[in-house]
Image (tube, rainbow, N blue to C red; front, side):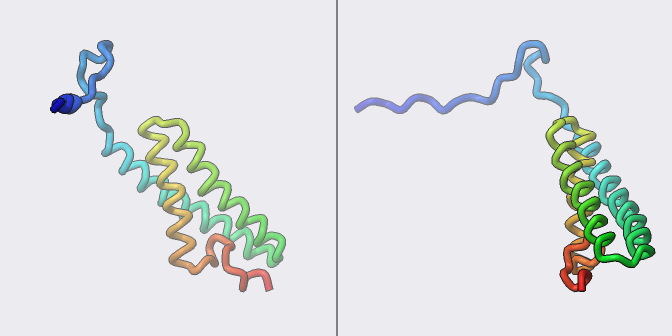
Length: 117
């Protein structure tokens, strides 16, 4: 009966880093995620005030598109950069968009169909 090969060892890192794992920057990611959430909410209030002052369903639709591109689109682009600061900020923007949508039942992000009647 043949024996099983030994399990693989710990991951090896490139020799340029001295064989040590790269530094973890979770504090930067978490801090910038909070900044992204707060930043998105500030922009959301600003866009909401501008849209409500125009009193038009077209303005509501354009505002909803701008907020979606800012929250989701910019968040995905920042995540794609794969830097610790950009990952945190991108996650914060997307979390902020999601929280604003859930807490306001879609009124703050233009997702609620009642806004267009």
